Length: 406
Ligand SMILES: Cc1cc2nc3c(=O)[nH]c(=O)nc-3n(C[C@H](O)[C@H](O)[C@H](O)COP(=O)(O)OP(=O)(O)OC[C@H]3O[C@@H](n4cnc5c(N)ncnc54)[C@H](O)[C@@H]3O)c2cc1C
Image (cartoon, rainbow, N blue to C red; front, side):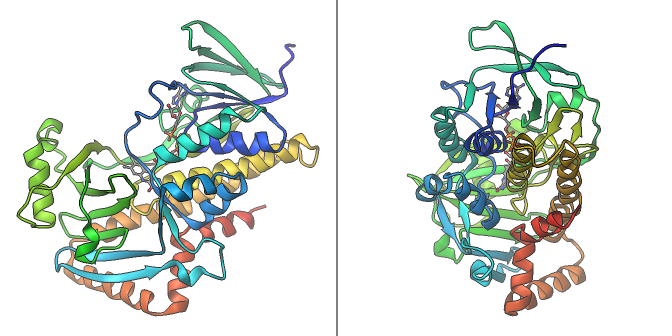
């Protein structure tokens, strides 16, 4: 029987892998963190997540990451629902209603790329993390005592990396998940979402830093990011039959933006991309010593900003269990609880809520739209209903439910 180093092998230095590695390392556990990207291309990742909910800020704070992110982000206590069809604000929700529930009664608009940049800097100086950048993981095996991962290292040579457990924080295409035959159950939307990044201050038209905009055909999301220069991200649905090159033509992007907000002057477009939206949850989050976390375990629509946030929550939940095991305070069965808790959250909260969010924004039936908007207005206007609503959207409710799962 081989002997395995007493460490956790984490694949992927995205927000989930980095948070997991930092929590484990700060508690004294050894980690080998494997990331395909190197120092030369780590920051060349397409724009993705960026809204960090209060519960996630509490977790970042625990590992010293919050103080690095706050100056690079925008504190946004309020978010808006708009009716694009009628061109008016439906409801404004203020996280100040959560002032007795959290030290962070706001979201931090801080993009994923800044989060991984700051967390990677921390990982580089953490003595318990053996960081392998520019190293591509391609397969692994496990037995009753440990795991061996096979990688191609920064010199292009094949190498093995062994440890007690392997955590797949590789993102949606997880090789680990496929290798252990776990189904990724759910569906993929037909339409891709168009993301346009614009240097323009939408606040002059009454928008908040974070806006969800309903419309029967052209729903949108509009988010503000700190620069320099400050940028806003606008999302639009697209025709499933349209070709990518046509959708991304500069004139097509300008036309989309002018339709959204007719200023008569060209917008300064600083980036654009198209993405496919999946709603899927892994059938299991663990097989033996192989464990899934973050997008490797669940993917969802970004409407509501739950993917990265719930992935970071997976990381902290799992880390605490691995730490308890290392200290002899829990046995391996605690990892089944990780699966029960976090899979419940993925199905009953993240999936359910993001599917509902998309339906809410794109509802076509005028009577249902009116009912939905009246309900949002009534909720925002009543402090207790608004607090309950925010406890759900800010993911506190999902954490409390998970805590109650044995
Ligand atoms: C447009 C858009 C907007 C979004 N907005 C939000 C939002 O506001 N809030 C929110 O919570 N979520 C949002 N999300 C979702 C969010 O981006 C993801 O849920 C999050 O990035 C998942 O983090 P992760 O660490 O699990 O995986 P990833 O971020 O995908 O990171 C995986 C890492 O693993 C590495 N890797 C992959 N394969 C290998 C391999 N074979 N070997 C070594 N390394 C490997 C990758 O290079 C990468 O660094 C958004 C997504 C999109 C597309």
